[in-house]
Image (tube, rainbow, N blue to C red):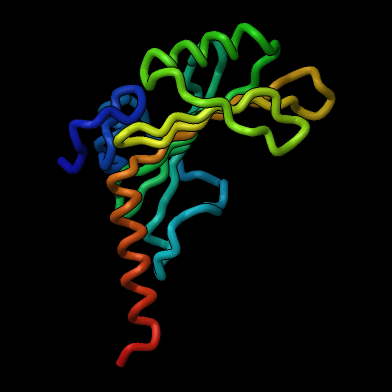
Length: 169
């Protein structure tokens, strides 16, 4: 078992393998179609993989969760859902996040379509939540992401060490 005792999301713990996460959440994951854009700059980007858990029902909405792994160990996840109203989902999700991670801080909205944006920086996790107005203004996109800081720092250290070796004999 590779997972830590630190809870990630649903029944998963950080650093679980894909197979352990599937067992913990009683699901099967499918390979993500989304490109991985913001990963630490390790030389072999194939060390990063992303898998999706589809059809998860959270806060009264059908969602999907994308899990990102490094060397088959969970270090990040992203929850994505479409809401058909603004206030009720925002209130419920914020309440859940605040109960888990504390008050959090409101984050400056850098785009006009972002309605809400909050962040939490705990000892072990960086958590973000945002809601934005979809095109046409009739629905809202909600995103929640979390990164496991201890493992992320290890991955960044691997990237730093690799850069030192680019031209070394």
